[in-house]
Image 1 (cartoon, rainbow, N blue to C red):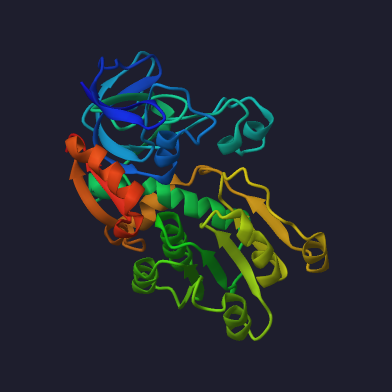
Image 2: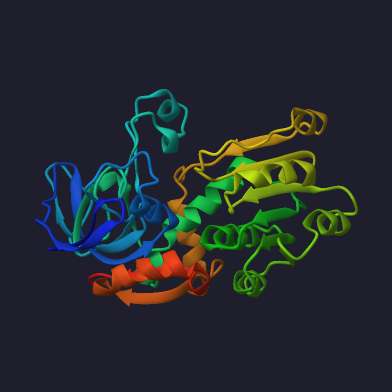
Length: 340
């Protein structure tokens, strides 16, 4: 069986591996499409502290049920599914209060255990989500990145009429933009330093775009908000040095959603936080957002196809990694066709 295996940092290839079997309580999925994520790139570079090598990566994927393990009920062979990568214990404090995405014993498919960049993968039956009849398998592979956007927006608790500022117009920034628009947030401002990404943000409904290197972002935000600042800020750029600016641009009672795993310290001015009573929230993975995302994709409220810049065969995945490493401005979401 073919799999994309990362044996060590910067040591990756399409390899022949032993095909998995459906473990008890699990389902064997024949993978059709899988998306390359920034988290996959961090694993390849050795920047993910959670991964153990060798690892078959991939946590954004969809396919068809090929076999069911012992004890699995209500799952039929041939069903089209996507897979939530968050595997939680159900017993620890976060699980008990309904936040399994920060389970203290969590495993992430494609990080802690082998993932979707292989022809077949065994996954817990509880993590399967059936696809609506008219939703294609390639678009279904995008449910996971949209679930990241749904999660950070929930963590920020939008109010009617709130403006949103999104730092970063890469894939996650664009999913936040689309999800915010689908949920009724009318004014979304997007900042980035790559013109092509800003053009895509405008196509997807950004009300204003700002170039972080050429524009005076702070002055423009204050002009657009008549000096009030922005109630909602989503950090999809994940650059720690931007936090002081976010604190300045947030309105009183504003909420800032942080998505980055960068270990570099950020300067945090307590005065900015306290005088405006700001809320800073972290957002990790997704907390049961797959059903909402599937519904929005099926209804057309989210335009998954607009997110995809490349569809490549499995054998070309190493070339796709090289492109994302050296020319990230050329790509949005790169989908790999594995067994469609």
